[in-house]
Amino acid sequence: MRRFVFTALAVAVAGCGGAQDQAETATQAAETTAPALTAADLAGTWNMETMTETSDSVIARGVLNFGADTNSWTMTLEGRPPVPVQVIAIAGDSVVTRTGPFESVLRPGVMVTTDAVYRLQNGMLMGRTVAHYSVTTPDSVLVLRSHAMRAQ
Image (cartoon, rainbow, N blue to C red; front, side, top):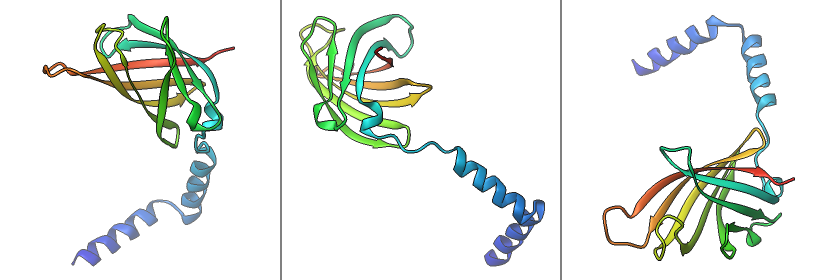
């Protein structure tokens, strides 16, 4: 019975448009898909601003320095030394990173490690970051967002 339902559904879908139309649609979709992002695509200096998830007020400014290989990436917040950025993955239009531990901008004296996902959109890096604070209280995690523009 299941086989009959799937076969009938396939026939119905195929009947809704010609095979040629479906092939052209698939070809157009493949042609518009951007090539996968690489470390070399991101290499350079990016000026970054970070906000809380619910506000447009900038809480931190910094610079992301990305090398052509992922072993030399750093983040430098204003007035701070560079912090190594570990690249977890690069896939599609996204890069996943881990940074820290380093002293928090929002909680002086508290160490923080961040996990971020940046997406390259219209020439900008748009990111979501989860900050993990080294505390034992319930407020040990904060979600942030950031954007970065390539420095000229």
